[in-house]
Length: 285
Image 1 (tube, helix red, strand yellow):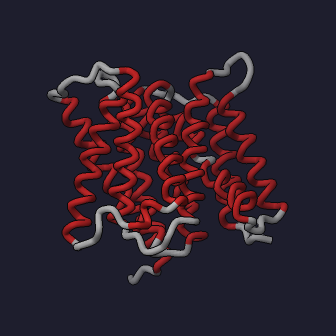
Image 2 (tube, one colour):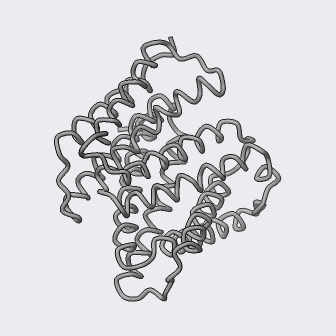
């Protein structure tokens, strides 16, 4: 059976989300004994070097002029913010909760596209955005059960949404390999910033090396699959499969960290995912 471009794109998007979910598990496990800044810095450097070798193998420039454009500089700033705060969130809070909050990122992108780029967003999609944000509030539980650490995930999703919006304004023509090298360089920057504050870096050993290797390998596989997915199928058909990350994250969080999301997390996650899929598949009118 021959798959259509949209079917192939959906399959690679699902594989990408599985890769990123596994990467989160390895990062959280490594950060249980190593400083988080060291974990992010190590994974970022290895990933950056690996992608840079691919860039050189294709005789592409490592630092194309497009990297110095205002849009790319803004993108880098948002990516460092997203990587840093999301890393803190998955380390200091429940992986299931952080992953559920992160699913609101596409909704923020939809709202940002309307406010920043003037894209047409009909009232039904705005209603979906509001419903998604309501889902995030259900997960955060402002009140007696509120944890300020949950706001780390909110800042992380704002960083990732800003990165995606800045990407729309970035110069065309950059390869997946060049963007991969830049993305992992920003992860290394986030780790360096955090490590400069916390210190206490040391030589990893034993299982820590395996955790770092696992985070790097699955992070790179996830990135490769993501870029292939977004360049294969139609965005409206492929993007909703981003939400499969939540499914993988919940399963892995329960299996490896003994997490048991409560009713509020499930309800909030359902609101975020449902409204996100509706907003992404709905026409602009």
